[in-house]
Image (cartoon, rainbow, N blue to C red):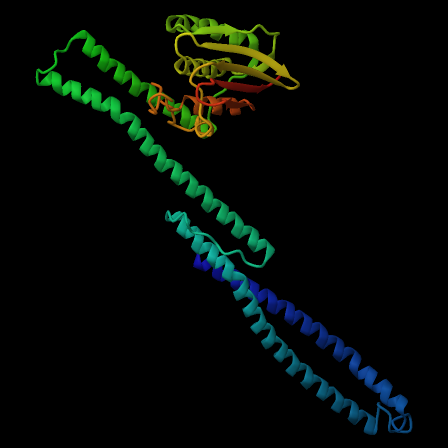
Length: 372
């Protein structure tokens, strides 16, 4: 890196000197070409050095012309050397000032590469270098945010894994010590905890692909109304078992181009969350509408609702809306289903939003997709 900067400074310095040398050479040539002739013309026109023998071609005029040539040559050589010295000094100062911000950028990039994401570059006065410094600062901010998210994700994953692992470990040790018998019921409970871990691993894999933009999509023309109706009918038995009414609002065909399996995944998550948010006697209404160039699938429930402070966070990883009665985080899923669902919607060029009047007022989730 030092050699690269050194070559750049040398080239800049030589370019300044080359410009100065070319300018001085042109000035030297023009003066040598024009000055003697102009001197002869002016002295001849002044009288006393004319054709009588005192002109510029012979006698005293010739001596004066030769003296003038010598003075001009000496003055030009001294001026040329002085110009080169001054040009070299100014070029060195300008190159040093130009490369100083680049040195700061180099120091900052090394600090960022070393993990110091708080490093920022002072914005120089030069427009081009200022743009480069702003880009480096934006890169540092992005890396800092990414590192913060990575650390938080590690802590969240560890927290989510701790409970099922603790249950499995405690029960297995109790069975080994003979405290618990390895009954089918107890083994089924352990199997459920392992399924929780497996679902968490699968959800984390899907989340990673979604956040990295690597979701595999197979878009094809489909009717969103038909797809929503099929998914609603598939889950109707679960709603009936929980005593929650599931109502599908009739609607016209709404054509979209989307991955049917991915959209089913989103609808399954929305309907599952709505069921967990409801108690016996509540109602969940599902419908499909279209407006201009967009199609919208809506899942609205009359369940416990979402507080205003929690509403912006419902799509965060591992965030679960607190139960208004107990204040504890509710839900038995991995806590990243809505995060994945929103990523799927955005991968289709759409969006997933949530609104709620507050605790006890239910919630409405809207899946918006571009209309075919």
